[in-house]
Image (cartoon, rainbow, N blue to C red):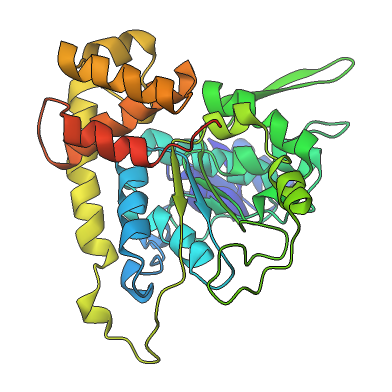
Length: 362
């Protein structure tokens, strides 16, 4: 393969390729006519030195939120944190990529190809799980892709990684609604007058939001001054179908903080990632994909319940007026909880915990 010298290192990511790196077309002419033969490029190995992720132990407290983060990582589930400012929602979200299994060669090549197409800057390290955090003012084309010559957007740049949407209700509702299809299919189709381009978009969505416009609804200090109408209008920016596609909903409450916490007393990324890796290995061996990506036949086969537990779950879903999609996603989370415990059968306790992460439709 003949390639520009600046891209030679990333071309070596693909195994079995003989890479000829050239800086100028005259070099290539000399190579072909035999005057100056260019030796195959030898990789420096620099791309195989991954950058460290921020550590989970740096997040103080928030045991329940960390539990949800591990569940999300173990099953590739979408996650929504809701809570007042300063409770660590952004810190928690930024720790998710470090909990995920490393990219395999096929995934890494896909990520490298996307980064190469979307950027003029050559790769500086072996592709890691992307973590994309677009601003809430991002336009539709910036988020999902587009333009006169279609270019990948943030959801494609987050392929095989994490898309973090902070201040979720502040995004344009029309832009958020476009996410519904790629969240189900893992790709986005950009249509133009003469072009129809399909970009990969198998990302894990993590979002954060305040409980109200000012952010302090429910705080014991009584700081919130939002009216009921303002709160309802704020929450109505998020449609039911979009929220249905988020598996884990968690309120992150404010906790007492220490000025100099001891990081050794908190779970770190390495130990949490090891637990996640074991759960993912079970899923890969059993069904060949993460639990979040199970289709309906896979759901029926691998998330089977006893008749008693099935009736219990149906009753719970009726009382909470959960949609069928919500019930299916609840089952996938319960399957992940069982995998984290390294057990085959989904039990009532797994269903009960998974149910805690579903918001009522009322």
